[in-house]
Length: 298
Image 1 (spheres, one colour):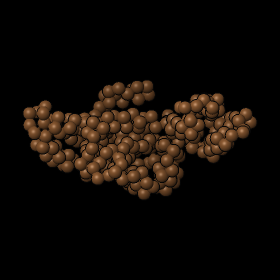
Image 2: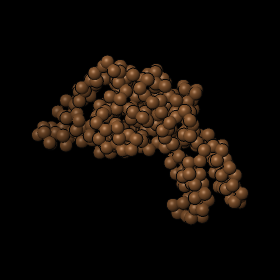
Image 3: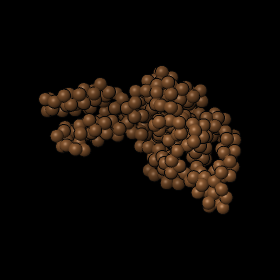
Image 4: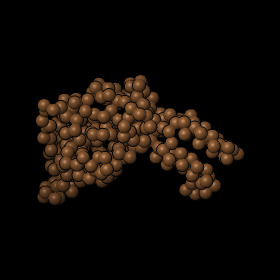
């Protein structure tokens, strides 16, 4: 029953399938989920932190919780090379304080955060740098370009299309820091008579390191987008959307904890490219201590 619930099936529908009332399903599943260990404790007890790559994508998805006017964020991190999720947090908002606590928990696990990819969110970046002063941060190029597109109004007008295509070439061609600098100078000589030209070219120069850090020689295979965690988000969102709304903050946190535990213990089946070797394994198998057996929770 718990597995069905974590797949986004409501108590009422589960009860109908089993021939019992939804309230009985609710009570049974609630007891089971409340007895599960926390995802954070599982990471701390079973994982060898040296097996994590230290390349972390951080993002989240919003869930509907009774008592909150707007949806609230469930934030988490995915270790890039192992696909494991060391920690998640359900928080009222994506505040600096919320991310500060999140990264503090990551630090307490012993996770060596060397490289972080995230949206253009200053709260994520500031809090990560506070806890991990030496972390290298890469702004997600997909989201950064999307912000440019939105500001230039490309969905409704082609006025700035040529300018955007010039800028987009910087990222499509994967230019390193010196190359980016010279390309921005070249473009600035062509596009000079508009505030939006000046703003975005200046912004690219100002953020040039965070836009090209994926070239840093220490981080082989370092991503420059949050595409991996976005894929995780899509899976999570499909489940939470089908449940519509959680009855309380506690019930949402309990469900999310169980969801992430199940993900960590579920074998990958459709990884492609450089991650094809993960198929047939669950993420916790890639990060666990050699001497321990993983718990059978589901």
